[in-house]
Length: 247
Image 1 (cartoon, rainbow, N blue to C red):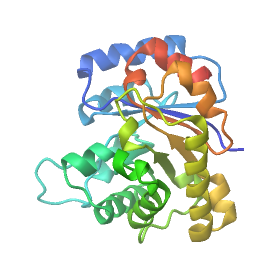
Image 2 (tube, rainbow, N blue to C red; image 1 turned 60 degrees about the vertical axis):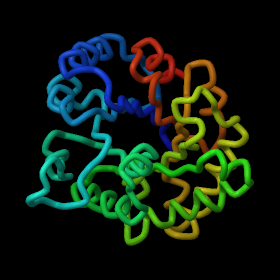
Image 3 (spheres, helix red, strand yellow; image 1 turned 180 degrees about the horizontal axis):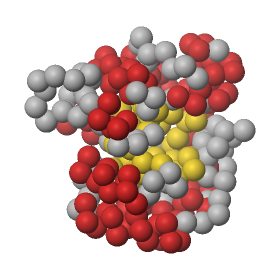
Image 4 (tube, helix red, strand yellow; image 1 turned 180 degrees about the vertical axis):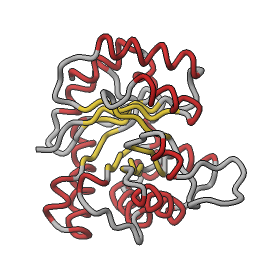
């Protein structure tokens, strides 16, 4: 059985001191649930996550350098993240691909750096609206997945998480139907089976991201190939995030 994962992507929100108080409130109200809670945080918040969350709630970063170390001003390495106890880190988010021109090849390098430090990449893929409307969304997303995993060899299914995030649904209030999400997740799992084998594919968690909210999470998470969510805005509100964990 794949354990559901509810990963909150805070993007560029909250100050470190606000985050610390939020973490403390979360621990006080953390529900008894079979789902795994995780938070993907700005770099500045990670020391507080290590201090407050410890091993009770998983946490990690929203990006990582493709370089191991060196003269790369402003970059943060996977080794630095591992030293802070990060279990997960996002790579290939559509905002990084769009705003910073990140290619599939660069995403693959970043994923490999994380694996070298035993950090699980949450690898994002997904199509823009015009591709969806043209009916080419499956082929587009699988090409993106192939390029983003080129040369990447996770040692186990637990070492990789895929997040399907249709670009047209991120932060827009629009959400893929549960049936649409399931169809894409099934296609992704089939591709993973062809690349890594059936056992690996059956063990990899595939998350849905794109305006996940308490009012639609249960229907999305009920799909057989949807193993949780990569959640943006709803993860910033404690009440919403708690509801997602019990969904």
